[in-house]
Length: 103
Image (cartoon, rainbow, N blue to C red; front, side, top):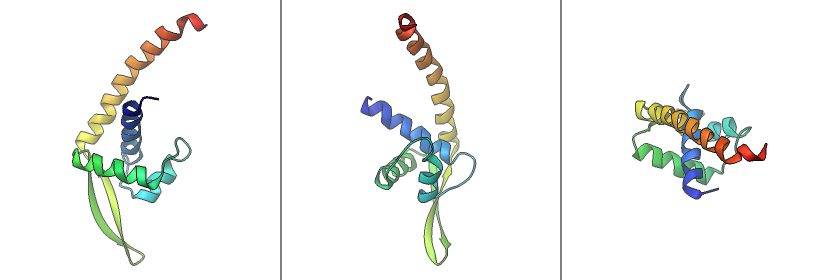
């Protein structure tokens, strides 16, 4: 798969993992695991990129005596998910065209 395409897909997957509630790294990986495998190093790179792009915010909170970073999706992040859904419809049309003779 094209690396840029995969990168964009992973960004949207991470945003989708936190769209309904704030979450932290380990839980994001756990929630995504049934759908996609992701290493911690990949996740934290994506989280940093999304934060810099204004698609999520970060807050630190104490949990069991340790500091934990919680990630919250912004309106820009929600907009990116919607853009992805719209773009995916177009991708599916292209896929149907490309595979129409395979049927």
